[in-house]
Image 1 (cartoon, rainbow, N blue to C red):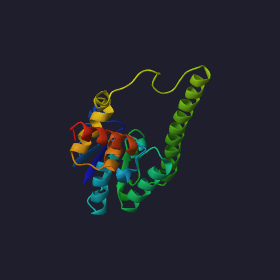
Image 2: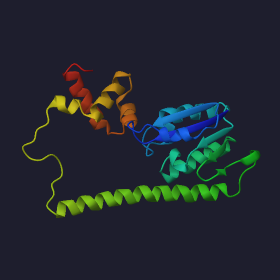
Image 3: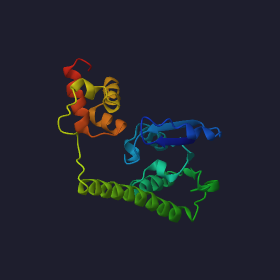
Length: 203
């Protein structure tokens, strides 16, 4: 099988940019989940893993290596596993293949490791900038959290986008952990929504 795997980071991204790819595939898999979630724990990632294990996948197309995860270890592990199964990985934005014509590409391993490191560094830089921005804000007299005197009602909380996404996932029968990964929030947040949703008869 010739498979295309797409991923966007949140439920609110449509993935319309992938429509520019007019190639024909036997199957297209699309995950709406954070790249920080290990590939094997993603809904469509699991489906792809099963197909590979069954020996049904010959070629996997991805837009860029970051679609397999921005964690260096996870990305390299997935690539090496796919290579061990004889799957040719086609990275479209690099014009690179791991096994063109069924033969190992000698530069694949070097490029894969280098690009994965760059993606990981990018994520770390974002975290550092966020932390620095928060510190500068606090040093300037800013206050984190809700302003004093402002109270959010339980129903207002349940009507938030995050809460409604959690509720929809729970209503579909997903577990707390699965919902946490799909929505991209902590299990504590999911449990809070579930508790209040049950209290108000939504769940």
